[in-house]
Length: 162
Image (cartoon, rainbow, N blue to C red; front, side, top):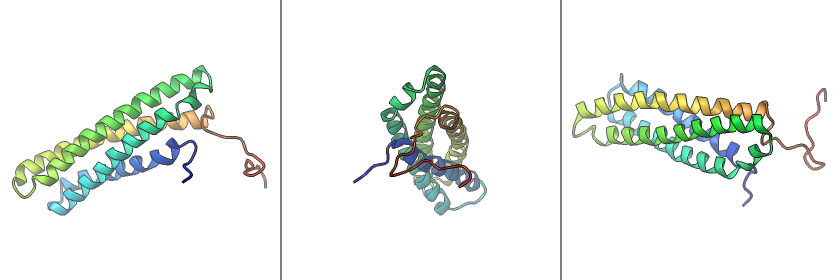
């Protein structure tokens, strides 16, 4: 099985999408009653947390790419790493709150609704963290060229104007 190299960019987009989708779902679940939406929100946010853990791990594995890009990139990398860890931790806490809200809806609807409100607030914090991490990740790639490989004969770099 061939894994992408670097692995981090291939993984990181999934938790970003799941976390942002889960945030929208958590906010919607405050206004739409029913167990189905809360359970699906919990599933999406658990997937986001698992993906965030995988993205954090893969980022540590690919750290060597930023080290060779110079001191300016190293500073941006530190910010990216810190925000990524915050996003991962916030996503895990958010997923736990969402799971609690989903598991308690039939036994304690009032507690579930309160827990879902907490989940919505936590998901907004998680989304902010992931947006900041993504900002610094984009800066690493587009401003400092981290992770960008030059073309080879087998896979040439794109040409302007062709």
